[in-house]
Image (cartoon, rainbow, N blue to C red; front, side, top):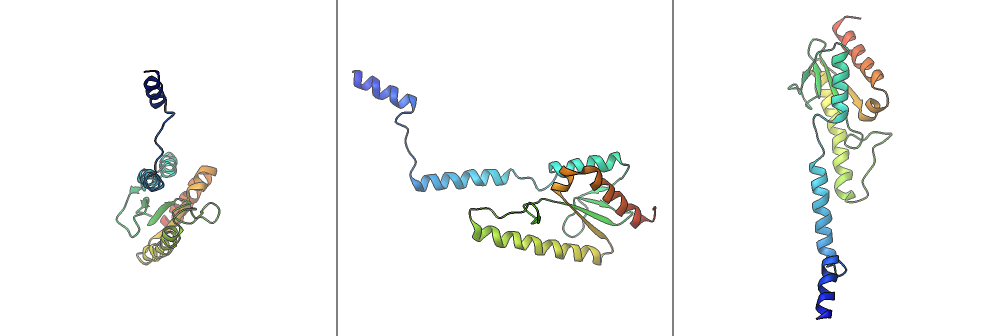
Length: 162
């Protein structure tokens, strides 16, 4: 009877925890990674919201998610300026962009395609007579007033209010 109590106590305390097999562990890691990646926002990110609030306080009025190539984060229709807030990872920031250590066969071409698409979007927006303006997320975190000044200058220059 003492043996049974000891086994039950050990099971309850986790001393006999079942170890997942390497296959189950890999599936578990993939599921965890999938959940993490699903939580990454593509719109209304913290840097984007910070910049939007600062631009609004500076007196600039804009449109959200305008129907333009590449779906800019903000647009200033009067000045025809399309603003993109680019994440350092997703858009290959030269200072902070890096390749993940796992699944390089997927990520390397994926991130390269993002860079090509960014150039194509810039060209398409220019062709429509708009000015693409891209701001890195780290620039917003490091110097928000400078980012606001860049946007204000671009909008004023394009609208002739300089």
